[in-house]
Amino acid sequence: MKARSVGIIGTGKYVPERVLTNAELETMVETNDEWIVSRTGIRERHIAAPEQATSDLAYEAAVRALKSAGITAENLELIIVATVTPDMTFPSTACILQEKLGAKKAAAFDLSAACSGFVYSLAVANGFIQTGMYSNALVIGADTLSRITDYTDRNTCVLFGDGAGAVVLGEVPEGRGFLSFDLGAEGAGGELLKLEGGGSRYPASAETIQSGKHFIYMNGREVFKFAVRVMGTATEEVLRKAGKDKSEIDLFVPHQANIRIIQSAMQRLDLPEEKCVINVDKYANTSAASIPLALVEAAEEGRVQAGDTVLLVGFGGGLTWGASVLVW
Ligand SMILES: CC(C)(COP(=O)(O)OP(=O)(O)OC[C@H]1O[C@@H](n2cnc3c(N)ncnc32)[C@H](O)[C@@H]1OP(=O)(O)O)[C@@H](O)C(=O)NCCC(=O)NCCS
Image (tube, rainbow, N blue to C red; front, side, top):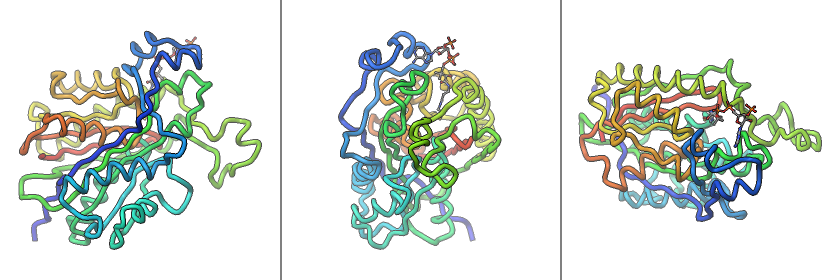
């Protein structure tokens, strides 16, 4: 029996209202707009209100995605939330969301693969639907990185923002939907990007708070090198698996961490700027939300038409990477 074709049948996104500009960051740490824009391409980022947690951002994106798919929450069968900033250790953010949505029939769990989490989650949901275990799935990338960012550390605080992007997956006509995935990990690089505090290794204590273990730690230079390398190799591999040439890409949706990393990938693919989605200037790095925010925004702007070939690729803590080729 031929495997079912699975694709995206609904999209939604949400960013919190509050905008934190580079000018405002200049008043918080020793930095300046020129440095941030030239090194990262970021101009501003959205920050969750004090009462908003990751499930609240995810909820807003989810409601929009379900509406656009024409699926009611009651008919939803699976919810996967990719996040590294869950509302709490447990229950999972996906279970909290299941309750908020009233999606009583849906199985629900979180997936942890940092900024690659959304593509990992797409691959998991695609597998469930292909095998017939479920007929639809809500896949969300949502993160509230502002809650784990040290706003006295200029090396990291300029880079991150909050947001959520959601898609509904379902069966699509043959020839459409996901053609290939390439997922990977290099656990040896785990030390380069991490948050150590609050887990079973370093449970929360006065000492973990004092030593900054509840904030993101990052070795920017080494992560940059990893990112440029895997954006290239993952892209080539996922195209090979899909049987597509780079010239066939209609829309390139890279993880929005740094404009220089995106540009290096575009050069390697020989891609003109109009085929690449770039919104890192407005949202900064929103971790698992980054790729769906970019994809959903492009779809809302009419930049992708039925039948277009779309390539998603991202990298993140773990270290991890994930790429996919799909026909819209
Ligand atoms: C973080 C990053 C933007 C730094 O850019 P860079 O060009 O590599 O800069 P460097 O690390 O060489 O640092 C250059 C100098 O700028 C300084 N600097 C760092 N942040 C700064 C800021 N916000 N404002 C001003 N100066 C800053 C550093 O202290 C360093 O000074 P020094 O040379 O006196 O030590 C870049 O390394 C990066 O984007 N890395 C990948 C990060 C990423 O994608 N993370 C998420 C993964 S999902």
